[in-house]
Image 1 (spheres, rainbow, N blue to C red):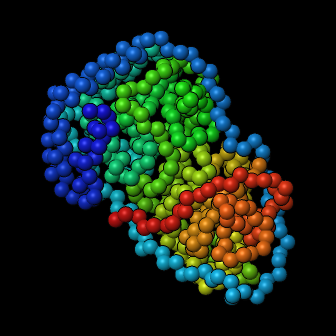
Image 2 (image 1 turned 90 degrees about the vertical axis):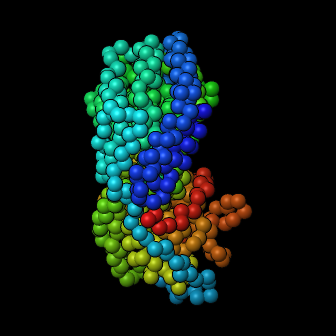
Image 3 (image 1 turned 60 degrees about the vertical axis):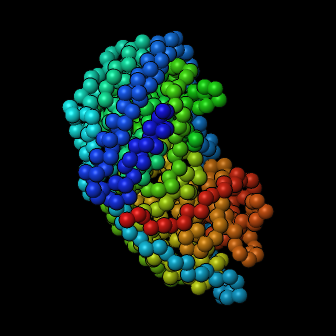
Length: 499
């Protein structure tokens, strides 16, 4: 029975508890305990043999590899100040053009965060209950006391092999089952699951990075992820492959796969070379995806701030809301591919406030006027500042973050604009990747004039959310002669959070 089947059985045994907001935990715990007893001896023998083989494999000579420098997202620097387009005289509305329809917005409800602490302790009578804070949600997990034993000062293939053997003799299955269960209950993606395990490792070893990385390696491998470790000068590093590029993160390539020096502490690792092995734990084949299809099911903490913009001559106030819990979660995200940011949802509280305030300004008007209204909102309601000025490094913002931070730049505004056009106007959007600049283009339902790009047989008209006062069809002068890379975006249709 491989680790993916183990995970499937665990989820099957606990899904009832997930779907009924932790109602009837006694029955779920009973089912869980019965499952663990089933074929226990045969399964444990299989695990012991697999762990022994892997431990012996780790004793073999490891190879020394030089790491590649992290991929830089864009070598072209962004402009410090954005240009302004000359104001275009307001023309009478063309009512013969397609009008913006009143797209029904879903009934927004706050996330149904579990109110009862999960306490599954099958077959672990002597386990410690470890308190974990996961972005405002108090959790408890069962930890074999043996997990607290430190790794030691020597880092090499023999000591790491011995570590694996020792960990395999602990009651680790309880901890992996509980953390996988929590990941299911809290709608965590791969990175969110890694953050959860990192909270466990950090509680056990708050001052030892080696112990944290080794424990993460062990737990991720046991949960079916292709995790590896390397060592250099007494320091142990966690290595993970990813479906998405981790920009600015060092990596090496084994058999065509990039393995990044992963860090869930929001502090990039700085090794230039290390020793590692060419192989993986049997059944550990899962590769991290950074896609955010659902927001984590953590306590909602809404904050409100008003912004003002003027279009065409009337001043409008929009009362923005953002979820501080979600913003805190995204602060621990690595810099990755732009489509990940374009494809992420917005929290229910933020979406309700934002879309309901803007909806009356666009419904019933020509699509072109709706696009121009949203352009002017994103262009002028937010102050511009480059990532280097605001954060000291390159950092893309999810739409929820743009609503919360005092400043934003081109890709942040493009991500927010694409979300608004999709949800308020129902139009298709693509991303435009210029040297040193990100913009968008919109596919209108009727022909319109202006600069455009062709993509998959459709005409997309340039819409630049950073070129202040520019309307649809206007390209920023600095990139007028450049040919952008076109990013196909998954439509981010706003949906209600689960009850």
